[in-house]
Length: 193
Image (cartoon, rainbow, N blue to C red; front, top):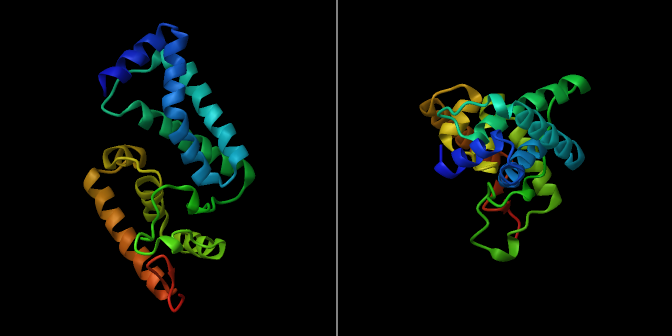
């Protein structure tokens, strides 16, 4: 755990409001993105992110430093709230529009004029992501879409780093095969352009 993070947490545990604000400011964006990627709803993601911080800050006096980062701790709370979110609604998660992420799954760097995927293509990519087995899809969401470190993904999913690397490798291969089967190549549909 980084010294700065450790210092902030210690100050926050002592009731330092500025330290609390700094923790929330630092971790709000990734927690919100995680919730948004799972719900597809900005309003629900905002509520889940707020609940995450409410729970984390309420439990902060009992928080103990471990090998996991504070972001991992918050991500676990968020994932538990997302599970509750879907249990209450009696439905399964759906994929969101991946255009909201900075790192595209499809390499669009070769043709800048085609860098923006059409809404139809984004829906198709989201549909293909849904075809992946649950664990593979979750690894892609965490590693590729959200940029979470392998060690943190391993902790979140309760697996070894080696298992996460293997899942990611299999997921990317399966996703590439699905793209090929559906005519999605190089950021545009086959035969287009």
